[in-house]
Length: 314
Ligand code: 13P
Ligand code: SF4
Image (cartoon, rainbow, N blue to C red):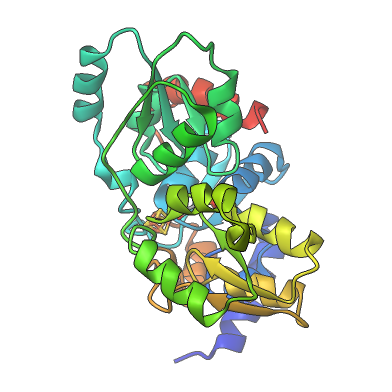
């Protein structure tokens, strides 16, 4: 039985020996964030995966993120410590359902959140992340109808901001959809002076955005991707923040601004898929170079274009 220090030292030794790069999402456990070469949101992680010179990428996140890295860098070895680290949102649509939806709207442009499988990306025109959804949608010619998938809350938020004609898939993340208006109202009551940073996947995101435009006492509500939250805390004068997303990000925020106070909108906002990555399986991953994430060539070829568009519009 080894302790955390053993795993941390061995992970660092193996990473250096194999010249690997360790990428971690903002929701990873604190110990993994602390030893990673780069911690960020989906967009930032894809950008680093596209640019890194390392031939071995170890992805501490969920499967679609590692798949995206493998599509962008097909000649590199991309590993994930646990192949079962999935995503409830990505699982809310499959290729058959998308093909059927497209056949019902042959004139529409398909915009897919990066939280989708490679097969879905291969059937899409554009990929987006929570940090560039609005910009990507605004770059699409105005007369085009949009099929937006799979997150209904991010879709509704993007539709509200851009005013575009959209059909929105009825999918949601099981962690974020629970952060709805009731939770938001409770937390606003408990922390009336805090700034509210809300992920667009939350059940309350579009109503919060509307409130922030309509009411003076809601001016301190802002909608951000996880990395957008980090940037906002860096530039804000506020001393207190309520964070409406997965709780793992609080570690990075607290490290960034130890003098400020951060409260999770919900103590229950924890993604069990993100938490499947542990020090022990990360160590085994580096030691045995398992588990490789590879996307079949024909699917990867088709999925690359929408991903490249996502990387270009930031
Ligand atoms: P970000 O792109 O904002 O990091 O979000 C990813 C995600 O999975 C949200 O649940
Ligand atoms: Fe997927 Fe939700 Fe987990 Fe993000 S928090 S990885 S959207 S299940």
